[in-house]
Image: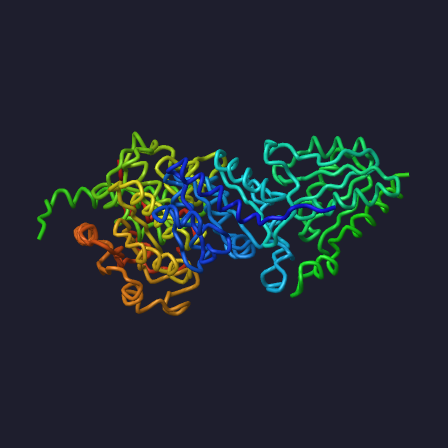
Length: 314
Length: 278
């Protein structure tokens, strides 16, 4: 399958500039990575409402807290590895606990960062953010959805974590479709097994479904863009109707999206399940494709997992 | 030179005594808490809430109010006592400190306590949060100021220096910070645990206007704050030399009262020293 690809960050930058024009309460912070995260677009248009804090992510999150406590809607951006783990205490104490209106929009998440290596490839950010009370966690599937997510979260009150990658990603969603945070998107209908993906892995799930179709397996594919709060209804319905679930994420298999789905199913509707994701290990330098291959994130890995689930269904 | 009415200073001092009395009662009643730093910071808080700051206890969300951030959140008892005495909530509520269902959490929570502007407790966050408020004030062309109180042990935290740089870079002359320089942190004297001197030079090097005073002298606190308010184009910090445990003889300079409630005998002695209030 071939799709048009585009950078999520580009649409993030565009959405921010539009928000800046629409609303004077929008303020943006970055920690010396604005040209990479594309908050630079906002900075160029609204220099007085953009604050570069330098390489000081802890300072950025607390400064954001002060701005938000004063009525601003704050977008704070940097690479995901620095915007979560590096300043975890600041996010916990000054953003999540007081429930302040801060949107942490992080780029360069996951292993597809590539050449920078393990130091920059965060595979724990979903886990770190989703365990925080009051925090919403969103992984937009493509650039079109990223744009809509940014617009949507600007209208909500409270802390949100948005995860974006570095690489251009396939455009899977339609510009005219509405984005609803509370509803996971069913991208393909199917009866035999459900493939639930987030981010870059959704396109892999769609390709895997095509592959499975060749063997007479009818797979449903869900884009689980919002990991918290979790759309349990759609997940349980899929489990009930297809009898088996595979999750796929560019994140550690420990406490990421797959774990959230697993816990939901264990408590609500128990079906055979398999998680595709990065095993309990750090990454390394390499090209996107080489890394996806080595760390188990290919179409083949999803197909294999689906067959395993199908076997256990009987 | 400003002239201060003797009676007016005496009144601030008597409020401070009452606040210390409350703090010790609250911590004793709770069975835990931090008396040392609550007592050392009291005079600074009293001057701010009863003389310096524009605020309205009946309308805690008044948009033009001055903001206060207690970065050394473990001195919450003193802050709560000051807020109650100022009229943010009933004085009777003070004895619910640290108890189940209380609005007075062990460390300040902005979502629970009227008058608390920022949730603190984990050290090193308050100055940066204050800077955010100061940036918002500048954006909104508001004239309110942000008063941040830091601990001296807290100077160990790197984020303070990130925030110090930011305030100076963005010329936040609407930020005034106070360092409660009581010279003790949990494990011992600051200079033994992690030396922070020369503290004034550090702040100067980060681009701040620095003033050093006796943090238990009401007049000096007022004068220093007025001087800080007149400084344009840069933030100011007032290093307040204080005594940990100030006001209760056996707590003064006593390390073990950093984070320990007094026992019954100590409590009675403290009450005697702080005098009958009300």
